[in-house]
Image 1: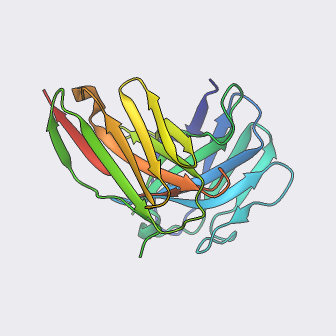
Image 2 (image 1 turned 30 degrees about the horizontal axis):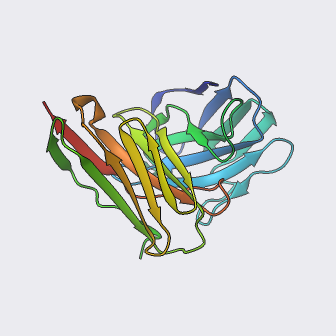
Length: 117
Length: 110
């Protein structure tokens, strides 16, 4: 099956700065998703990123805070802007229906563990 | 009220036990139901996927969906210490946007 990688795997950042997280898939996929997993909580969808169109954000998430790029069918970035300690979370990218996988199966990358001080 | 409710545990069982993990949900329109396993400091790993109601078996794992009761279960037979992880239920209307439960921490003691 395809492999999903994320960079960086972890980072410690100062408040007020921004961090860009990269997600790379080794096969072409139509839909990519970005999730947040706050400490002790479940995964929450931030946005859906389709190639060639603007990302669609879920309630409570805005483009100015979490700009997303999707330049091609194998790559996406999520930026966490003007960070505060409340942004400390694990950020995960996910892809929908990998090559060789079945429809509607969604797979996750290893996550980026972000700590904001 | 959360859309998906899942007891966070921890659930501690002896090796070889049958484990039952459950989720309830409020949105009767959900059609796709998944179970993920997440080891510490790793991304979620898809274990089981079920469409609509019914049972699905894969090795030691069985997933059940009861849409009339809005209740899903994952059974693990002959549990092993390597099964110790957090188990997340997730569900979706159309198979894309997933709504997750909080996750149940499972500990299998050898």
